Length: 429
Image (cartoon, rainbow, N blue to C red; front, side, top):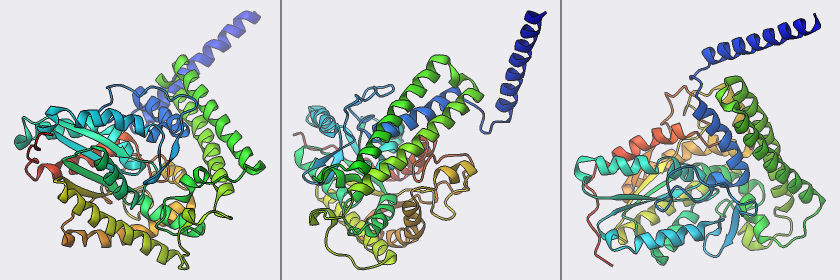
């Protein structure tokens, strides 16, 4: 009798589980997809390990998912020209320089994507979309296209201007340069100013720990321990979910995603605590720049002005080198009216508060100043409202969006590129 009751209870449990799965799957908007569930979870793990903004999916990358990063992979390293750079960038440069040196590069159209982490994500997600779109365009047919991804997490002007000049100096020869930016200029500029750093300096939270030789105190060590524990824990959750096939279940996938989101929240809080423990007090002047006495409005004005002047300068440098330059103002979560936000987007995009406030206050200034770029001969494409009619969920944190958002951005970017004839072949090197 006891075994019959146990069997009946087990059967009821299985039926209830299947019914719940069917109900949740039926009510899911958009429709549940194994691929999207797995990719959403993978992105969380990649962000926590630095892989989301790591070099890859560029012209030298192979098809398929990037290989897992080694445990000692550095997210950032000091760089002589741009303050800091993404770990692994030198290896990527070596591979790409070989492509630029090929004899057939003279006939090829080489596209370089510049910007911060949003541009890095765009370069990964849309590499093949840009390549095929341009190669299939009527007046571009017959020319091979390669897309090189120079997006760097945390970069802002004038780092991008200096990065391009550095890449050109060592042998990069792009025919087209697409710069996708805006958020980092105002969000990180305001964060700098509130931390006692000049708003035009590179993001203090991204490189102060690299350039400081101050000893690690208990507060910093505690934060580092949490960061490493959450990185390992998230990787284990993802691997376990894959081995059990949980991404094939909408209920299982949601449980996994909730655990990863909670792990990421702890990771992000500890990362901020570590950065705060290393910031500003007694720092050398090269980290903080000259004294800046203005408030928030003055800091944002300074950040927008350096963005404007760097765009004009980068456009002029590209023209001098025979490359076409397209400046793109990216959309962002906290720009009022830029997208109807879901409750989940509001929740995940709430922190850091200073970044959100920088975007909210700074984007009207970016749009107004960007409209003046054409007067200086800069090809400017304002995509800050590109998601204004998109009700599907796109953003997964304060500024980054899913691959679907990048693919939406690629459409008007391709249209802008195809509106002009392709660049002529370069002289053979």
